[in-house]
Amino acid sequence: MKIIVKYSVISLLLFTLTACLYPEQRRVENQTPHPDQIQLVQAAVSQFQQDTGILPIKNRDQDTPIYQKYPIDFNKLVPKYLQTPPGNAFESGGVFQYVLVNVEEDPTVKIIDLILVDEVRDLQMRVDQYRRDHTYPPFKDMLAKSVFTIDFEKLNIKTIPQVRSPITGDYLPYVINHEGKVLVDYSIDLYKLLQNNEHNFQAGEDIRDLIVENSFFVPVYSAPYTVENDEPVFLVN
Image 1 (cartoon, helix red, strand yellow):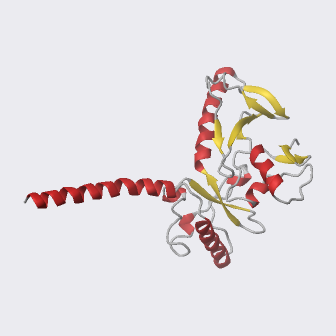
Image 2: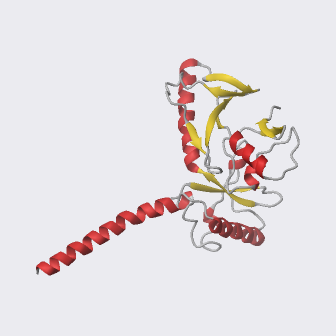
Image 3: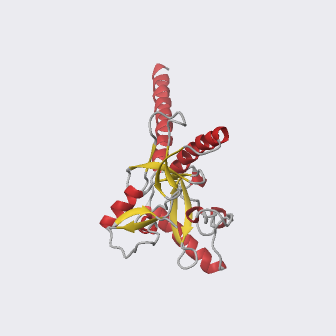
């Protein structure tokens, strides 16, 4: 009887340990971009378009920022074109939103890091509250026309926050535009991409597609950038 109880306890402990480890393993997997999953979604999108003549996307307002404007609607792809959404997709409990870029000429699947999105939204809430209390956004130094650093002291934030880039892994600063919208400054990422990739960009052209063309991601919450002396600068209209 003691032997039976002993083995029952061991079995229970093993089951509990497995149950604890599996969600953690799944959590890590769901925070990693997988090229094979992106390729599967790309194939499904292409076949859907070939069969129907339209793209499997959700409707968004016309003023939605371009990199967030065409989220993929997995309800239109599952189960005929995909068995399930990718494990790292938001719809499956992951931290990425699958979107399309270049929809007119060559619809291409990319992803948005929703951890970055949440961090920007959290800071935006602080900025919005400050504006309600003080009328004006917490501007500090002007970086370019309509782009400013943020005065975090006014927001009672002692340590200047940064957000981890899903593209390079570097930590990027926040900036704010003249409308009080919080943005991510992708200058560090763009500088590395300019140095490490051939390009034909000229001054006055938006160079953010460097990120799109050389990574899995799109630069959400970004201002337009151009190039001067082979370095990224904010594009001033």
